[in-house]
Image 1 (tube, rainbow, N blue to C red):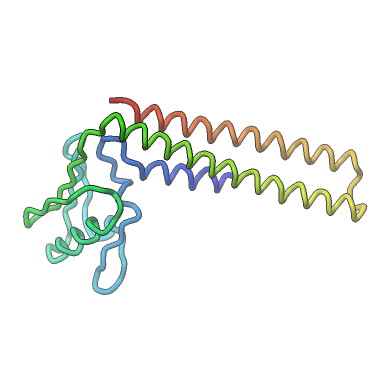
Image 2: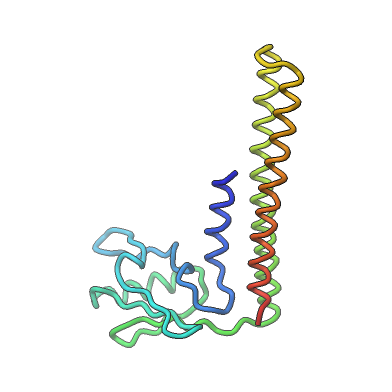
Length: 173
């Protein structure tokens, strides 16, 4: 369940909310001498202004490759290349796009909860097997199932808090 929450947090970092966030580049790979390499591994990433990400490659020959990788990704931002650095300018989000992103975030939260329910079901099945094999008593089985449910409820609240915080960030103008 902790792994599910970690993955959700990473996915939420990749959603842009109108401000420059270097995590939107985390999944982009650049062809670096035949090896797919993260952008963070081929250059320096900085945020000179609130809505601009600047990428300064260590090897100027990579400018075109980085630009191509960003264009082929799904972040929806066109890079500008001045021969020295690449700049990504994040436009201000429209109200409609904010609502769309908020729905997407909510969907991600639901997927995380479904994953945790699957974990609960697997745990419950394991408890039932142990009970059927007479390795644990019915009282212990009931206690384990209650404990599992409490853990699911606790982690579900964590997911809700993450989603709520991200939606608030997205809807803030």
